[in-house]
Length: 96
Image (cartoon, rainbow, N blue to C red):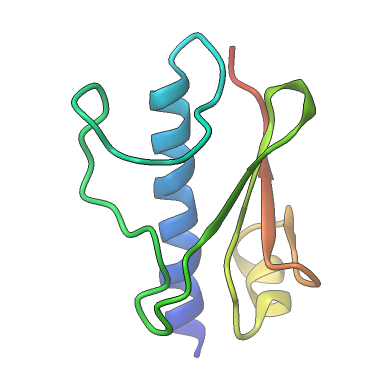
């Protein structure tokens, strides 16, 4: 269970990197899709359940990525303090 959750969290970080690449110095994209400007081998869905990861643009240029973690509280305590265990979401700040 913990290894699966670490995989999910790693996927969210890779998606965040893609969002920053796609945004460049402009606005965040409406959807996270690798392309010519930002080629990536990336998972857009949970490899264990097939459920798509959730991406949402927020005010101020921040964005939220979410996954269906099995034990998000454990992850928050050991890996990522800004993971909300109730929602399975991490908010990433705007990078101008």
